Image (cartoon, rainbow, N blue to C red; front, side, top):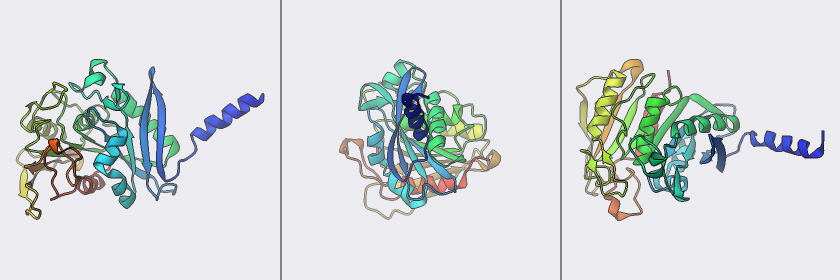
Length: 303
């Protein structure tokens, strides 16, 4: 075999070598597009034990690197021992990207980008370079990314065990998952960008958002949960202008539940993290979205 072909074979084989702990960037071909995602592997990576995965989708007009900083999920991954993958959206500007989550947002919606196919390809690629537990693949996201998590729960329920949308409702009228998908949704009732009650927000996308109630009701129905929830107000421990209420619908099929975490006084923010832009509104210190979603994910591997 000519030396050039030997070298090419070695390079292709090396591409599938298991990655070690730390940060990595991956590029995959999906249809006629090269798509990218960032990957954080915790110190526990490389063991013989398959690891959970959390897909973390950025908001509209942001990118994967922004999402890693905004959410702080790398630190939680190192503490708890899971992999975080940050998918990168598409757009005309390289660092202002969106996902096609149904009726939002931007370039991805306008050009019909298939971000469900991208996610499936991402998971296939990740399984080649990391020891992944396919029963424990979860999705979260911020705003447009939260809407993408909802779309995946409906259209990729064979791969997604549970979701934790933050500050973004469903981007579709209905959901039709192939199996019950547990949901924990975080949303500020003073969110001016993706309004809690629905309607047009302050952002530039022009999206007429569905209400948070629409998302919760749809998934309570899809998962077969109790319609009358248990509601609990958490003790106010921080003087940050916010309080937290947890609305839980349980007893769904296969143990599924739908939980709404209402940040009273909260804005378009990630609970437990200070936003860089004050225009996004208040971010609560009463809870950590990272801690709560991980506890939720641990309870809900795919059956």
